[in-house]
Image (cartoon, rainbow, N blue to C red; front, side):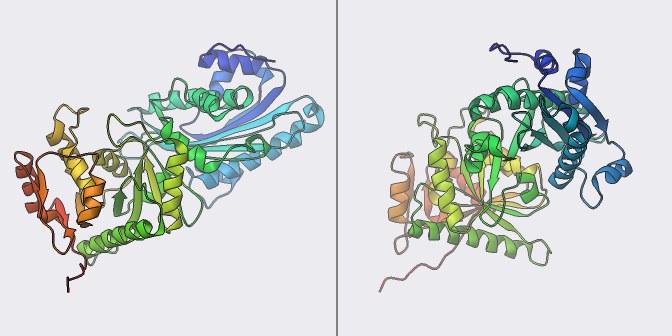
Length: 448
């Protein structure tokens, strides 16, 4: 059956699947994700699609079905659910329906907002499916964050997302753009998808790194994480309850000499935070921060291949990377603050600090004051890393901020040597005096 090319709402998508005699599958949902199967049951013709639906809400029941020893809202639990449900589906139905049926198993494990509003509403969603009767299985796994303010609205959004996922898998898989457009339909402002993984021949042409970058580039995620040492994971699994040092930048130069400077700067920031924490048992982590947005309102946003080139350059130096949707430091702070209340520090070269300080913040009513107050509202500080004068001049050449001067020492410029003209200069001096901006000292070669 070939569905209409018109844009379908959730009701029509579920009904289209129900009326397609070639698709048949099971639904298993833990926690708040009880709404996906309901769509197929209420639109009519559910017997054409639903082999079984189960809500493993009780923890003991869930452990008995899928094994104990893992967190209930985790990829490990989701993978166990996929395997269990798929084996059961094929065991029961393959001999009678396998020659004419494309089987699927949809699973999710979700934690919606609790009554106190103190948890992090998120979940894992997975689908195992065949593209042709008797064909090999393919898996797609998503990590999602729910942005609605109530659990009722979050559950509703998950129901729509689940229908979108099954429909897009069977009818919109030809290109990643059409697949993710279908996946995000009607929930693109309500659910954030910050991780995707896949297995199977259906995804032979898909690249994991490109897909992660696309989640940000396409507006589906606020940030995604790239690991230099292991498999990629959602940002929450990296940032949760951690003291964090972020090194933001454009990182346009990926040669080894620039890479070494980047690594040294991030390492210096982590060491500075260690000194701050003193006797604390917290071990800070350092992450490079890259933005998918343009450096200015006039410049075009970087394309995915260019972003991946810069990310790969940082990964090659042994650094981990967060790719953010926004370029403003306060937006990066807001993302990290979702997952930790521990100290957050930026370590930034003077050129980036100058750009951040002179940004007009046209998107904020309060302009500079609102932008800086958002940035420093939580436990946030900026470590200002010195730069060689020649590098600083090159870095801000296309920016050319007015009213900016500096002094240098042996060819180097530190944060205390910047001279910002009033009235911004008064604010700059206040941030220095209040230790919101912390000038870093590095060993500068002394002239002979």
